[in-house]
Length: 540
Image 1 (cartoon, helix red, strand yellow):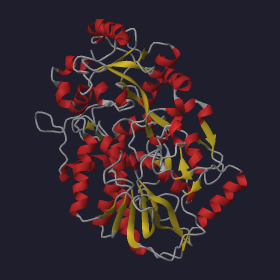
Image 2 (cartoon, rainbow, N blue to C red):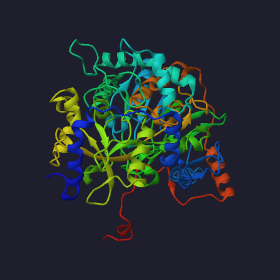
Image 3 (cartoon, helix red, strand yellow):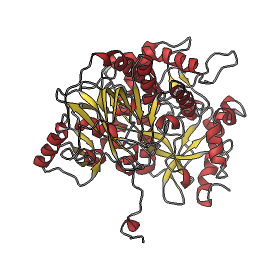
Image 4 (cartoon, rainbow, N blue to C red):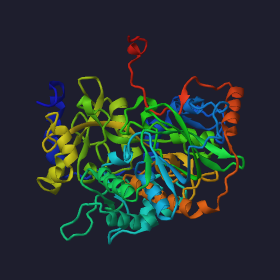
């Protein structure tokens, strides 16, 4: 018995109502009811979870306390002691981050004739891209258009998206899918050979192309191959810790830290592309996260200290379906594809409580309300609470074997813990998944700092205040391509001045004058999961 005895009563109720639920129609919320639900239950609407930024371009604006603490922290580099005269590497384009966005930017900058260096905190591909399950959204099917994709994305973003960025996203998306196919990505196919498609919450069409539930892994497979085939130089285990400007305010590269030797190096570059991902490992409001180990907001910290303008830092996405049990998978992402294929969300009493294909912020809020306000959640043996995701309904709706064929990764992971998702549901609760806001960019990924680009989750404005499923992979490839092409086409016009770290000195002075200094080193680089009771131990 995979689920403990204390959960069996609720499981019996779920099974007793399955036949009825499989036939029922559950209404969607009105815009007014949706807004009331968000304001009463979504973590973005908890004032105590946010703090005001004391310095910089976004001074006075609110952001999660965990991020503000890093903005107010001490830099790893001492600008008064670092020697800028000793340049270790001179390149045309420096790409910081080696996930899907960084790899795409590097490939297109290289194709334009630039000398490219890509540096990454861990290994090439160690990123949220690799962990993406659902797929990439693009209007590539006969009953779909970029205009419909645009309308869905704007609505899903609570009408806060920047229209120019959304139009760029949806218009470029079909050609990105075609480009990925040309590299060898093995997308799922319909029986007639055309691309298969699934639907994600907030979309009005089946427009998400996937590779079973290993989509990100497959995408990074071909991107890594392309990086190697082009012989693009990659520095692994070498994160950037601060950006360097020239005396005209142009971004002129970065200071890197070798995690093996703890030695700094200086890279001078005519264009610098930030593709460092999100902030999941800050564990905003103590939520678990789906994010990769390296998602510690480094790009936000470096970009902000260099003077980049931010947007929507006060909004973070919580994915509705993070694993609650087994404990070894706590917080692990359960793809939206399951709800798109018919899996239902069910409370302790065996009843549905929300339309499963509402947008992610709405579904997350409904689950939080069900568990925390209505006391209709199911408790795990460790005291965590969640609701059921009735996965076996997928085989009921689409035929036996659908789960094992199309959701192979999820099926195998749970099988390790004696849970058969063809017969049993999954216990879920919202988990921190995506950073909606970030560095403000234009259509080519350019930031407010000349020579600095931002790609993917570190950027802001594309997704508004909530992202639809499938649009994150679209985002990293569309804007990775554009940033790489633009940097590759314009680096030859750049003449760098004298390198300087005066922006770091000014930032520190402003912090000290505000009295907001935090005794924490930033960027964080890696999360610290040491238990408090062991931190004071001295090992001989």
